[in-house]
Amino acid sequence: RTFKRDGLNFEVRSVDPDDLEKALEDANRDTSVHGIMIYYPVFGERPCFHGGSYDDSLRDSVSLCKDVEGLCHFYRRTLYRNQRFVDSEQARKCVLPCTPLAVVKILEHLGAYDEQHAVGDRMTGKYVTVVNRSEVVGRPLAAMLANDGATVYSVDIKSTFVFRRGKVEPTEGDDSTESLVRKSDVVILGVPSEKYKMDPAWIKEGAIVVNVASHKNIDEQELLMTRPGVRYVGAVGKVTVAMLER
Image (cartoon, rainbow, N blue to C red; front, top):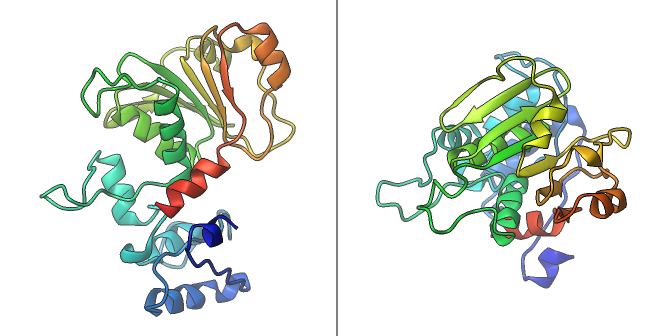
């Protein structure tokens, strides 16, 4: 509906998983197609014949000229190397994943980014916890925020890592998720399960909480009633669509 309103054509091509690679090749060659998205996960951790997972292979098979999600190898490499432009003249920005970019734009709007600092340093001194480390949302978001100067704690079900500009390493000591969240200026929640609920008492006063999951990962009413000064964003879908259109 949004694409139609804004004068953009959008076509859903539904295919069986085993036919997806051929359909992707067809879309890459189709001159009427200017952008391609694949709804992940498709195969999960199913291994690919030539290495890695099948989903990784699909991401790298999308034409660089049509990758509107910024998930192919070229754009992943530029993101993690903090290379912000495609060309040496800095006329063309690299494509960034839509949902992480939407979160960044929301944080900019809420004043988490300090515009008195230079671009690339506007999150300096900020602590962020991201509960999700998927290749589509959590990992690129952690890298983007770290590349802007933040110290980012990346939490998933098995481990916690700290992202700083250009490097990632395990957290020091026995820091629990609770202790990391309690000192975070920004908390990003992206757990794709209705069973996961973060304790609102962990959120420090004045923090920003952004829920990117389709399920609510925290009790909004309790959060806003008990944690003074907290700003809460319950969904990012509309901003994500705007980033995709851009």
